[in-house]
Length: 201
Image 1: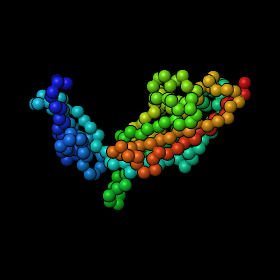
Image 2: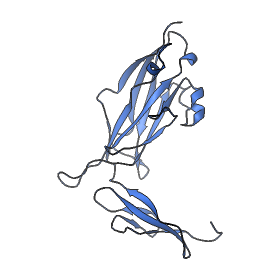
Image 3: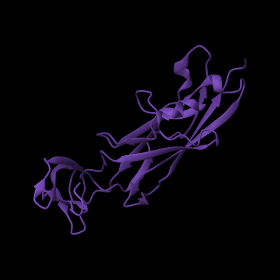
């Protein structure tokens, strides 16, 4: 960026997205879509890029009815040391009967809040030094997810058995949240409890 140059954004898809006087992007009412945008600095423009325009999130819901699960950890089967998916749906209240009610392509945040020795995980590779941490579908440390085509987001908890005292019975608590204009959406945050049972030595 050149010193003193003000960058403005210009929507090439004004029916889907407009840029207001403060340079904020404002999506049009209706179903989700994709808008094309360019950045402009005193006539010098970027190549067009795309921005998803999504429906306003109105509520965060559990994907399954059971928010409390139990994991029996195993010395021999590492696949057993991963929790079930902590799934949530992000919903939109439609303006008319039969209209779209999903919020796709939207960030959802996960955080371990208990116990303290796992609550400092950040979603970075360094999380693998903790006894429990959050992962994506590929097993990579990750605390955020983007809702899919059905409005679903999900993360799992991985337990590292060598870092757990044999015979331990305890829980990991995970809270899940989504924000709209810096405010939590309705029912956010949601709380999951993953109980775990470590085998005796």
